[in-house]
Image 1 (cartoon, rainbow, N blue to C red):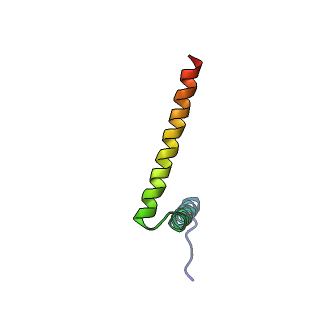
Image 2: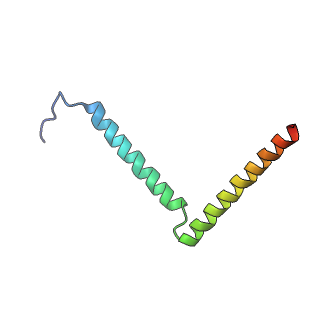
Image 3: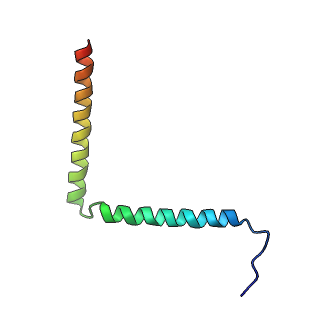
Length: 67
């Protein structure tokens, strides 16, 4: 084997390695969970938009009721 330098910033090497593992894991998780077809993505986005609009309408109604 080759000798490892004693002056190397091992905390930085470890941080980069951990960051790489985390990024790869998150990417793999999102690819497994997120729909792969554009039709499914569109449905998911539309449902999210409907929920946001319902929440906004509920908040507007609460504000109107206070006045």
